[in-house]
Image (tube, rainbow, N blue to C red; front, side, top):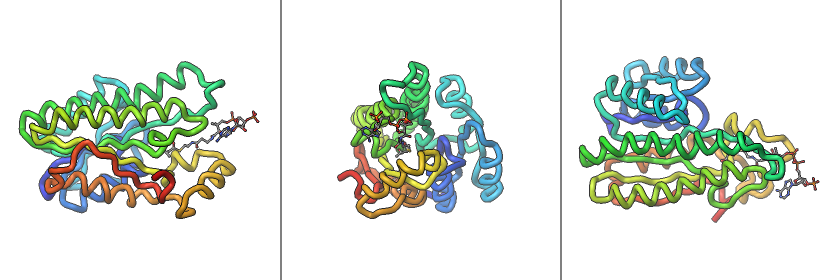
Length: 242
Ligand code: CAA
């Protein structure tokens, strides 16, 4: 993987940071996308000044996706691996969910992932090789009270992944999903303490996952040697959903 180029959206914090770090440790050049926290992005870049560049943008905006993609190509020459990791939550019970909570989450998690995937797919298909890894969630596999919007987007990624995988199969482009369970990140830290206790008690391994436990699966799928794996979902959830 040395010398190859990755673009990781939401790559400066949480699971995305662990992914960016793993890929950089493998010698990859990594364009790290971030939306709102330049300090985390700058700190990560400082750890790998020769390998990591940082790029601000909102993947929910098509224009930002085009600009970020172009910046990474200009910095590193091409994109061999796209990791669609950026995502948001706006949890509310369905009875209380506002149209704006629905629209925001769909725009970022589903449309934003498509925008980035399409940009990457176009140049990967032309070159005849590429890896796209979409980060879904156990919530997309099993649903969750209070997350009708998030669950719909994360299930949607399965359909997007299988469809793109079928199109990419003859062009050397693999498209896969990783579905993390509850991982120790800011997103999970924002869940009320009581809800987390209930969640952990339902996880067979009785603990949250670590970001790096997800990142190692992404690293595996991003490897050029993983070329016969496409259209799949890899779940990393401590047994929460089987
Ligand atoms: N199933 C069915 N009903 C439930 C329920 C459940 N799991 N949980 C709560 N309810 C019911 C409650 O009993 C309550 O009913 P009554 O009004 O009849 O008493 C009603 O739903 C309202 O519950 P809350 O008091 O919790 O409602 P709220 O409006 O205060 O909060 C919420 C709603 C914001 C969604 C809150 O419940 C919450 O934060 N839940 C956790 C959501 C969650 O798990 N998010 C995961 C984020 S991490 C992530 O998404 C990453 C990933 O990929 C895993």
